[in-house]
Image (cartoon, rainbow, N blue to C red; front, side):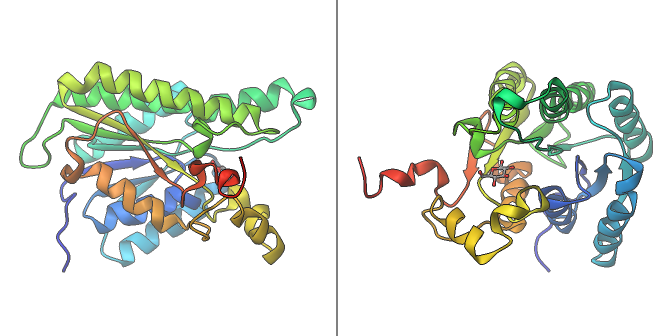
Length: 270
Ligand code: BGC
């Protein structure tokens, strides 16, 4: 059996009822962590329960927890109940995110606010709750060299501008500097905070961009490695950033994007 690097650690994965969050929950559980499979609303409960059932069937452990990460009282409750049940939290995967795309001149304040509230304020609220617990508990050397690890799910759009998606790109740019600022603030306390910037990964959020052969061909023009990513590509990076294998990695964004940030348009131009 493979070595379980995250044995006796507790991980909250926000937005784990689908996409990259599900992949991260599966991989963290396989690495030995007890997982909290967060999902946002009553309608996502069944999906979260299915994720948890698969994790348990594979020998993992965890619970599901409904919480809209943009709501302070719900976030506080998720952290309090997780700590009450499992004793502490060691890993936060700040993953919940969504898109509400619109041409800028037509973008409503609601579309703007929904994306900023979930993608950026949600990461703030969860990171703050996690940091408070990490500071309270400190390092437990039997478990990890760090007092806690936070992995923020960003995007290649923390650096690549994205027409028609100004709210989303703004939220991801915000995540980048929130992550770096708090990584700087809490490094002396042995809290490690990093981001992952996925490129195009096959999940429901970008279904239309890869669902047909034609769409996929167009998308591949943006990916030098000539393959659309899968959630397992991101999940492997999550486990690495959560484990002591990356103990000296702090305040960085790991791009997992098949080279999407390499300006592929310049390969035969410029
Ligand atoms: C977005 C996807 C998009 C990808 C690459 C992600 O952050 O959520 O919709 O396909 O970036 O552009």
